[in-house]
Image (tube, rainbow, N blue to C red; front, side, top):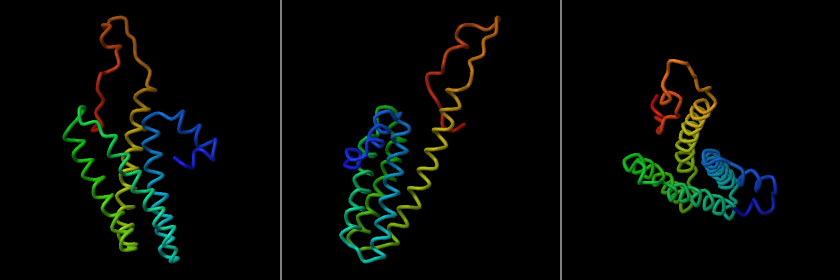
Length: 152
């Protein structure tokens, strides 16, 4: 991240963030750059739009490269398809200076970010919940589950 070198606050935020927070930062960055590119195209500032769309594309590629297919291949394939769609929309927007393509990508990015935020909130609530200890319960009931379902 070029911006983090010039901004010590950003560098510190990135270095101390949890993996979940880093993912949110990536979504925020992609959304911010896509919005900036959209504005730049509207102002006919094509150099800036190119730069911002290229940055958004790089973020999408970074998120795609971070998928761990060993954990859940089917889920990763689905998410990779979404990232592929987003990347193609951003490339199309860059090549054709197409605001509608940026809007399509932004719509999906915002949904994905909102979904990720809900998951993070659910995980945080799970981790913040007190572990109940009753005298009659076995030791296994006090263990943290080995897996977490985002479905409910």
